[in-house]
Length: 213
Image 1: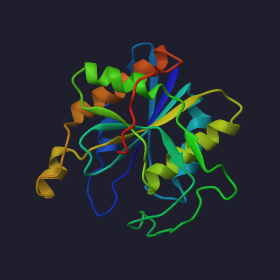
Image 2 (image 1 turned 30 degrees about the vertical axis):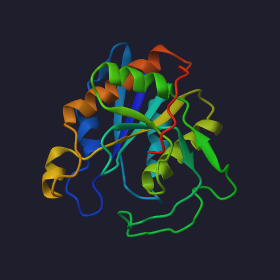
Image 3 (image 1 turned 120 degrees about the horizontal axis):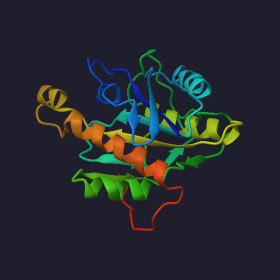
Image 4 (image 1 turned 45 degrees about the vertical axis):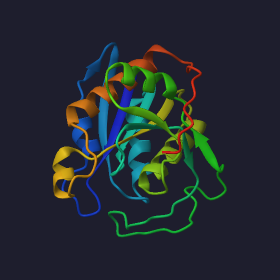
């Protein structure tokens, strides 16, 4: 079994992005799963193209995209990506779309197909703060979750996909005056658990995870 795990390059004037930091530290093998990683540009126009190329090259069974959500305190597995681009700040191409669909004429939303509740439960068992999130925002992270599921919907190969939002790392929080943060090693462990759990099961558990964040 293969997993493709992606992070993003830094954006918004920052010098680091914890998603690419964490992804770069992943082992090439997690249990019986071969892991391939990639870094996506924080760009509405380019990110999905880079992701599609990586998917076509790797031919993964599982795709997990990871992105930064500054201000969040937990590892947030996203439930849904919506067909909206509405940028609070410009992306790395200096583009700032407002009220623009990810794909014109596409479905209003796509749900992640990883066992997100089971993954969250396993992360909590490991002592990691984790939750199911019901909003991926409207920046490039949501864009890539929607684009990922849109790719999977029409791709000839069968695969499952999802998106993990992660907090700042401590070095960012120090510069920002005490914003919530998480150690890179803990983020890496969370990603490992998601890959392990997703590889081990095809159905999710039924628990209440109705938080908005």
